Length: 350
Image (cartoon, rainbow, N blue to C red):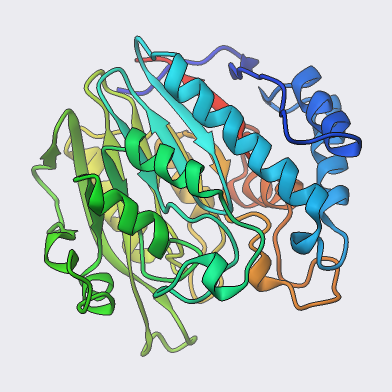
């Protein structure tokens, strides 16, 4: 069963002051507050997101104290709402760094591809690596306290984080990923506790109040599809029937589209697609997926600073507005939302 949406859906977003940001950062946040996301997106919202993109689009801005303060302030805003407000029905989805998301349901909080910044070494903390754009120790601890289940599509450093994973495991939380992710951390004392779920077709896995379907696929490293990294797609359904699809960096859509057809045949649906909508090593099925499922798209994988060489404005980074436009154009849909750091959207129960 799919959600029924009005012609213009106002996505509900809650805002508080981004306390550690001031000056231009505070003005940019206020612009987003004044122009919250709508489906379809308004021109005023587009202008507010473009202004933030231009603020970030300064060479080496991830080293700038004002941008780091803005980022941490938006994360504090999201964590404050998670700690103080309870979702009665449906799903509340928060956008954090790059592909990282926190999702609140009436029963649980889960995460997708938790990562805190552009640190590349998955055996040490950002501070040890010398990467200033990161969460504070307090924020990492708060996330570990809030999150019950942390899903990771694959083992690349922009989709999983060593420090956050250590904190989650120390707190007794459940971290779910690929077999290769478990092998990567085989020398960690908690490696055996990492969860690897089998692929599903007929029956989903049950994790607490969540129903979880899994596709094992790849982020292909060449056009011949002979080398690549294991990458899962997750279809996660809440207790009151709201479903989210996260494909990570699956970059050829053939297997994904075939699996989604089986999911639909088995009675599943998708209300929200998150993560990057790009396909760059194979067939692009964004439009076919949209026609099959008619979801809302909340594209992530934005401002991944490891994709921007020093001294460049953007490099291979995707901007917030650029990835939104890509989802609209490739998916042939106007049912898309551009979420920036710390913002959230509420999806009602069907």
